[in-house]
Picture 1: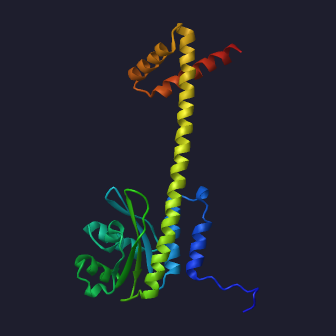
Picture 2 (picture 1 turned 180 degrees about the vertical axis):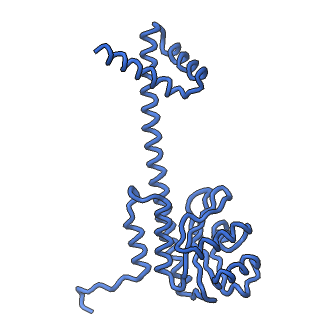
Length: 243
């Protein structure tokens, strides 16, 4: 191989690059998780269908999946309250079924998996954030669909996915905080305007003006900022009529 030639990237490298190219500004968390599921199916050997489970405040759900098989088997575990995807997410340890026909740890679920046509599965934990547990669920059609290479690839892929999801969460949290701060500043500004108007009209101080706003809010069962906005807009409309 000449020095000008570059070695071909592996499917795992390509998947990592694809996750790295996602724009947080143009991508929702659900879209990010769907991308994770799609890439897992394409990248990890032996996967027939893939899904991502999230457990938030003890409530499990599947926000992303590549096919009905994955969704049905996830929900089968949720309905029973046990299964490999739940244990992988909460316990943060890989859970594998090599042959569902011989599985004894989750007998009810294993029978359902066989009936659905999945004889093997691999669930890998994907840490998301505090109070939210996640797992990448990989379903195979044949028994022993996942060899050592598939397990190793799944572990590394899940670590890439965890970083992408964590960074997406940080981005969304920062964006929401900025929006909330902006809204708070706007609310404070309109309340100060309304107080100034009341101080001028009633010849009172700032404390008395705020008390008037608070009393009006309680009487009308409306938010204080809405009362303040109505006062400011009313003055603006009155000036427009005079002009």
